[in-house]
Image (cartoon, rainbow, N blue to C red; front, side):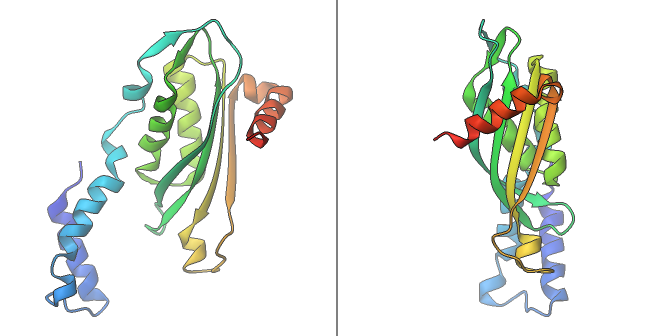
Length: 186
């Protein structure tokens, strides 16, 4: 649960720490705005993927289900700076499927936390395996990290790509190739 009062105190200290006048017109309401923003950005801290993956539908089709180009925004736990991009999430059902919006909601649960990209992909894949009993899951995340764009190495436009495979996807290169082929289609 986000503690807005602590966030407001912290933002006030931060502003003072960088030499700002916290009473000037443009900054008077900034601590409150930041507290409300953090409540939204970190909403995934209080959510579980099981909330979204619980309702399933019977389906005989045991082929690949792919939801691609799921846009997300997250916050790097190392620098408290945003990283954002697209997640491509696939799973192989074992007699039951979940509504497509629930896959995007699952991405949001994990994106709306202090996070690292590598962990986020694994959490999404594990949720599909655990909650749906999927035969396999594969997650590819492509993201730009502001900690590399605005500071440090300063390389805007560079993307980090991570891939996680579970179950049948981890065991079968042909399934992995099918995933990549599906991503290339419009």
